[in-house]
Length: 273
Image (cartoon, rainbow, N blue to C red):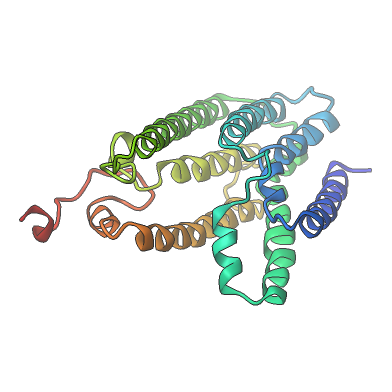
């Protein structure tokens, strides 16, 4: 038995369970509910097979555990574990025939995303295969960068949480929120700062494996790469929905970086007039 085989068996079980659950409950957000949990397990599988004696693998597992704890907390306080389905799936379901959506559910939501959750953790496989490489200064720097990115995502999610709480209170009081979507704090520099920090953490995890192997040319970069591709598509879909709800979002798009935090551009002339 190898750690990769153990991970593969867990992936297979997760695919079966989330697919059956989606059919029984008619709720396709089951992968979302394990998103912050199974990667933590995968990292500890690799660290455990190394006997918890490899400093790099243990640090990687601890960092991903911190990532998982933060994301689980944020998902839970938004009602993610109380049967609330991702609003984007409801929108997509309306645009597809029932059989088309079920094909999408099986192959993309269930299979692709569960496999992706394993792929993003496979830099641990590279580290496991090169576990004789000492933990050094570069590892320490990457760990510090990971923690900084984790802090950035925590701040972005907290800013969004406070804004949504304020918006809900305004609506409950019969007032029209102004603005209708968050544009301040980190969201002044990026329309999706939480997306940026999330992706960047997995690129940082890839660097641990690359450091262990002594080369950036590692096939395990595939996980971080595919995650980025997933976020590109998800961001575009999310923004189309948001623009349909809030026409003024176009002005925000014109002056604010999509993902990578960057100083805002001057407002369009029409908006300043």
